Length: 410
Image (cartoon, rainbow, N blue to C red):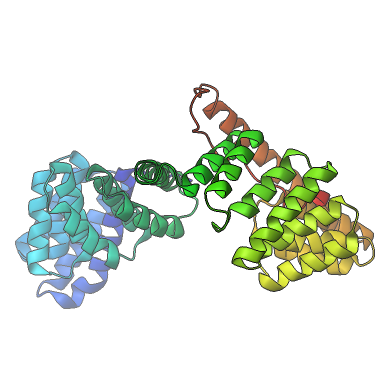
């Protein structure tokens, strides 16, 4: 869902402003009743998209109460709608002089200042963003602020802000687009710094390997992981990643399975056990038809991290035949942990079928099909983005990791 157009944000702000004014006008000004009537007529005019009449009513309020902050803010919003940033700024400053805690006026002043290239914009936007409660205006101020941070090349601060905005409105397409752009820029800058300050380090080799993984070049990635370990065999994380790459390169090959297991166990010996490492060992055991060993590893992974989706899927897969009710418990956890976990919903449908719960089974099957369709659309978009990628570069999008358990694919 995209953010509402800027004009709509202004109208929503103005509507909320007038509603609040009508509520307190009766008791807060000497001519409260008359002021309230003017606000009501302004409200009616705005519903009819009659900005001229609305402005006349705000001016009538100012005639009765010259320092009325809401009326000045209302005119300022109308000025913003016309693109008259300077006049709007003057109105918001008048409103703030009368009521310094008028956060909406400060936010709108910050937007005007940004449009005019005023250096004070950053401080106004930052102060108001922390205090705003209305979601549409807070989102707008946040996006204005992120644009300002990008202009000033303050990408670390921009990334921190985008995290807050994603939490505030997680389905907003504009926020998601801006977030991925800022995160990508920050990641690229960091990688460039790594290449400059430590070009011969194991971490540089690891970074190259991870880029190659994203490109689907497992052979090249394995080569660079091994180069990293030749430089320093005790760097955290590399043994595990190398083990995964070896396994993915030849899942059914016994030599590859043994090599992957060796690397993962070496990683555990160096940096301690993790849920992901145990899941990888469980996966290898499953490929070797060693169900009891796989169960032990999945249980260990779940104990280390009850929110590890692959452990939940693995335990569900092993329980499916003899105890579908227990499988349902783990599959529900997996579906909650990852809302786009199609295999979890598909396996839930199978478990419900085993228990003769047909209505629930059909619901989960429909969900799995909808998720599959959505992911196919995402894959098509990634393919489109990479159509013109230069072959000599390492840049590319990360492959969508869907499967948590190889035995749970639909």
